[in-house]
Image 1 (spheres, rainbow, N blue to C red):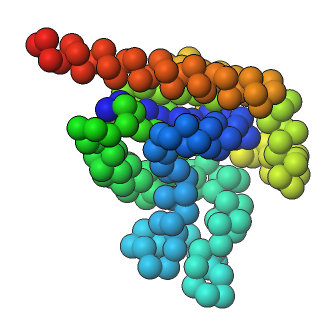
Image 2 (image 1 turned 60 degrees about the vertical axis):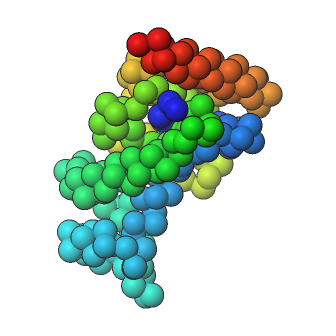
Length: 208
């Protein structure tokens, strides 16, 4: 089974593409959702984050993600400290998830979706990397539709590696700047390619 990463700049369409893979029957882990769960009060990471950052709790004891985001996206040093807490544990949970998907009659590939696959070094233990890409104007329009003002949108874009750098690191690129049906067609073609790669790898291992 291929371990595939799916990433791209903010508002480039990662979640949309991930849903398309799910609709075709392939397992997808949302590593960003894993990170959200790690900030819940019953998770050990929650306490580590609270010890590092202050005045970010809601009344129920949970961590306010908007408050935390306002701190770290305005200060790259603080963002680095948060990433140092979060990324090793996210990587461990992702590895466990991939291991759980691997079975003799399991899927030919499984996908972990995350915004920072390249920046966090996760790419080093993945078999393939898919980067979802669109133009900066579309990013800005989509972020505006989410309710972010221009200042906050630029902070989030600047906090990530430029998308053109991610594209250079990619094994495969899906362009989401067109219509949804065009994106869906690219996803279908890529599933066939990844399935063929898995079959070829299995045959080569048998020959050896």
